[in-house]
Amino acid sequence: GNSVTQMEGPVTLSEEAFLTINCTYTATGYPSLFWYVQYPGEGLQLLLKATKADDKGSNKGFEATYRKETTSFHLEKGSVQVSDSAVYFCALTNYGGSQGNLIFGKGTKLSVKP
Amino acid sequence: GAVVSQHPSWVICKSGTSVKIECRSLDFQATTMFWYRQFPKQSLMLMATSNEGSKATYEQGVEKDKFLINHASLTLSTLTVTSAHPEDSSFYICSASNRLDGYTFGSGTRLTVV
Image 1 (spheres, chains in turn purple, orange):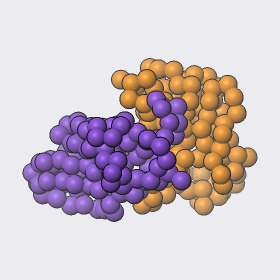
Image 2: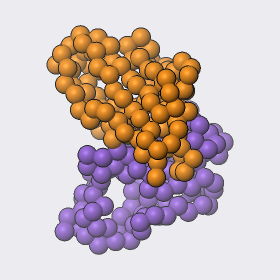
Image 3: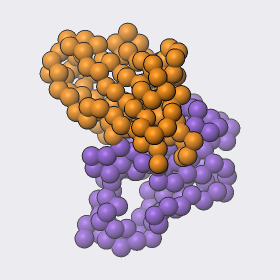
C-alpha cells in the first residue's frame, strides 16, 4: 500500500543553520507529494508540493524535489529562522486533483533556537 | 484563500457522552471533506471521507456507528463521537478539498474523555 516515512524528530537547530528533513514514500503509480507545516496552535498549512518526477516545489525559502528514482521528497532550507519552528508533515496522494485523501508521515518537530 | 473553521478546538467530556465536532468551509464549497485522527507522535490517520449529500466512506477499522459523520451542506461536515470512552481521546482534524492548493485543514480538535 501507499505510505510515507519521514525522519523522526525532534530536530533542534540554531538560527541560520541548514535544514534537511528526509521523506521517502511507497506508492503505486505517480503520486503527488506535499509538505505541510503546522505551527503551534494552528491547523496544517500547505508549504509546497510537486506533482511529477523532477518537479521542485518551493515556498518561503523551503525546497523539495520529487525524486522518483529514490522515491524521496526531502525538505531543505538554507537558513532557518526561529519563526520556522513547527511540525512538518510529508504527505502523498495517489489521486489527481484533490479528490483523494492524503497519506501522511508521522511529522517532524523542528525547534529553532536564536 | 480557502479557510476551514473547525470547532471546538478542545473539549473535555465524561465517558459515555457524545461530542460533536464541526468543520466549516468559510469561503468555498467543499463537496468532499476528510476526517483524520492523530495520536501522540503518530501521523494523521484517515478515518472517513464525507461527500455532500451522501453517506460517508469509512476506513477499515473505523466504527461508523461510533463516529457519525454528516455532510448535509457544501460548507459543513460534522463528526459526532458517540458514547465516548477514554480510548477515543485524540486529536481530530478535518480537511476540505479546494481548487487552489488541493486541501485546506481545520485547526483540529483535542478531545479528552474522562
